[in-house]
Length: 113
Image (cartoon, rainbow, N blue to C red; front, side, top):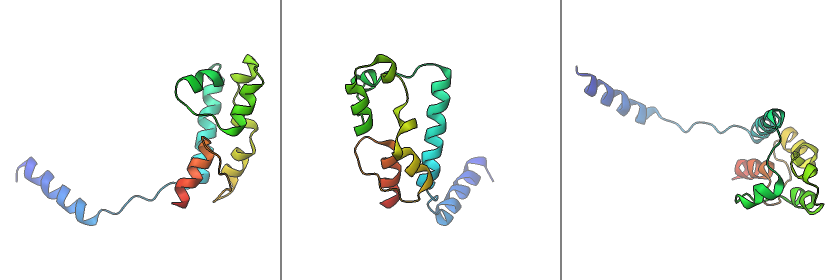
């Protein structure tokens, strides 16, 4: 049997038995996101909130409030570290976080859909 035919048979068998992969729980996604942002912050300063916003990223309610303070030092810190959405997102299966542009809210919104 040729390699091409063998691969075609293998692909056909995989299509029959294929089941959708289970999605990772929102709590796990939240913890991974927090760990990744912490690692990025360890390597150097993050983009300021103004720079993030100018690149097309939306700011959540908490980030928007921090950006209004106008401090460059505060603007390059990770506001998610102090936000209660992070705590809820990492600990609850269906966290009640509903505001726009919050990654933790997005993880939990996707798990409810």
